[in-house]
Amino acid sequence: MEKKRIIAETERLILRRYEEEDLQDLFAYVSDGEVVKYEPYRPMTLEETKDNLAWRIGTEEMVAVERKDSHKMIGNVYLGKREFEALEIGFVFNRHDWGHGYAAESCRALIQRAFSNGIHRIYAECDPLNENSWRLLEALGFRREAHLRKNVYFWRDESGEPIWKDTYIYAKLSTDE
Image (cartoon, rainbow, N blue to C red):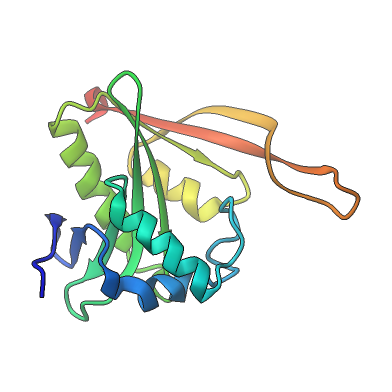
């Protein structure tokens, strides 16, 4: 078996690149409507998850989060490279692992690593209705910089009209530490 491509480790988690063996664990959360409620995609079928996993394996922007105790892959942190030494962060976790601090633990480790590697700013875009997400960002030391009103839509209604959504923008600077 190929050695895991580990990015970082925490007390309870292994942060690593995706692998073919992650298919069922990935499907468990990307197929859950409650988990992807605020994401720009609908719950995925197994076939869609296979295609999505291939993309995740091929990119360095997606970090798989694996529990050390069970070796189950429970979610991911997205770190997209942007201009001006900046990253965009996002996170999606299996609903059964919510409320245990795994998202905070994995994000904290990856944020620290990014800043130590010269990143200047990390920001996140968040639906104001996704209170769990923006509360986590605030707990991680991010500041709300903007509330954009009806600036984006992912879906259209029955008559074809966009379903507009607001966006919060949060950011943390390397100098905020």
